[in-house]
Image 1 (tube, one colour):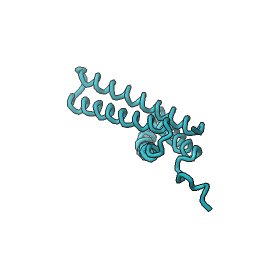
Image 2 (cartoon, one colour):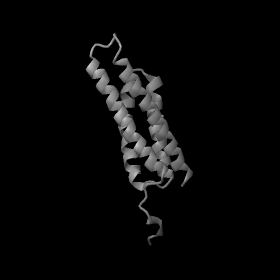
Image 3 (tube, helix red, strand yellow):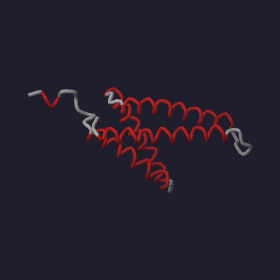
Length: 125
């Protein structure tokens, strides 16, 4: 497997771990006394955990070299960019900058690993 795809897989794995941690944090915080809407907090946490499970599956596929998992990886990273833009506009640079840099690194790593080329395209005349 090309090294750039290993880097992309490692960064996807890191995203999975962070999203899992945030999901657990939201679920646990939902039981606190300072939450106005417990249902909303719990739902957000559960959705984050479901998203982390999906991202974990994508990570597994990329690390196994499965081409079918590269498109979901790309879509996931592209969807991070508007969220990052909103965070940056809100002055939350500690959250926004990593949410811009890491997805761009993953997109570039998949591209450098030949992830967007058709299989056998270089052999065609």
